Length: 170
Image 1 (tube, one colour):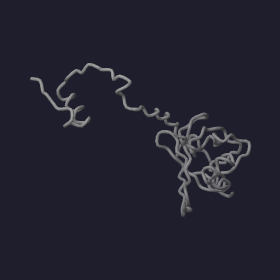
Image 2 (cartoon, one colour):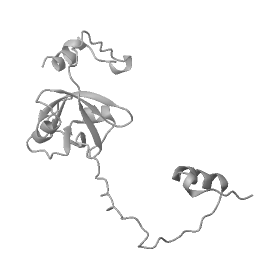
Image 3 (spheres, helix red, strand yellow):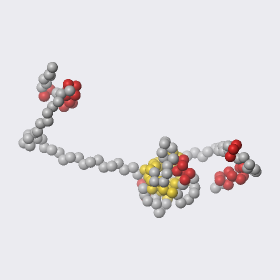
Image 4 (cartoon, one colour):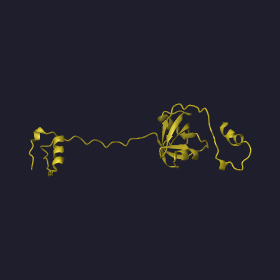
C-alpha cells in the first residue's frame, strides 16, 4: 500500500528515513530560478592537513646509533633543541628514542639517521617516519649483554675489555 504524508509535518530527516524505509523511487524535479533560495557560495575545498613531524629518511653523515639530524628550521618548528630526546616512529609499530642534532645542509622535510636506527624502525632510505618530542628519558641502572654460545666460539680473552668497554666509554 502507498502512504500519504503531509510535507509540513515531517522534517527532512523524517522524509529521508521514510523514503529509505519504503523503498520509494522519486523522480528528480527542477526548481525554477524565481523559486530558488539564494545560493551561498560553495565552500572552499579543505586544505590538506600538514604534518610537520612526518619526514623522509636520508642517510646519516655520522655513524652514531643514538643520533638523528634535522634542519634547524624543522627543529624550531617542532620546538626541539639540540640534544633533546625524540621518539621516532617507523613501520610495523616500531619506534626508538634518539638524540636530535641540527644539520644546516639538510632539507626541512628530511631526517638523517644511520643504518642501525633505520633497521630498528624497519624503514629504508626514502621512507616516511614521524618524530615526536620525548621529554626526559631516565638513565638505565644496569645493562645485561649476553652473547650467544655459537657467536663466541673460538674467541679467547676478556670479552668485556675487548668488545664492550670501548663501545660504552664515550
